[in-house]
Image (cartoon, rainbow, N blue to C red):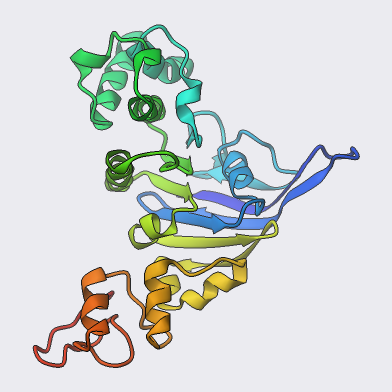
Length: 288
């Protein structure tokens, strides 16, 4: 079973003078427990792709199915770029429980899910459940908004720029959340400009440019061959660009900082840090 996006296209304000084609013939698949990073410049269609995938927009062409059925409410949870703007209830627990209740979950079970979700995002239930969501800091509000999605227990989630505006602690939380989702079998799509943060941690990558997919494949393939970023008119991440400046060979780039440092200082074979034999100790470093 999987989340399948098949040959979708989408046009805003279709049939008017303000019409704008946002997506063109996009296909992708997300398996349970796997993560996909979508990268592209501003205007490439990333956020529109997430909205269509979550069933919030209906594609003009193509289809989106979740485990063999047309996508519907609750099957694909979407975390917006500023999810805290969606908070509205009198209490935090009431806000989190709204989604499950809207799905027809019995009251007691919905609030049980809400408490579990609050714990999953690292907030103490007794301290926060009765507070107003409007009394929270920005980072806390982001966590509560995400808890509202988790409480619905969707088998798939899409996250739009989840680290935008967050400090170090907030970014670390998003990283732990991604690990938690995958370990619980949730399929995840992340849209982010923060390539350095997510590229080493995801399974697959999609590069978008001018409404189309220009490359898709395993994250390790893109890391090993970062010249592919140019297909989407994007620069290489800094760590990969550093290796290029030092003459790293195609297929030999790495996001392992220690391996890159050792290679740059002459401890690894000339070609690059990934998978090369250490000259003195016979150890393999970098990506597998």
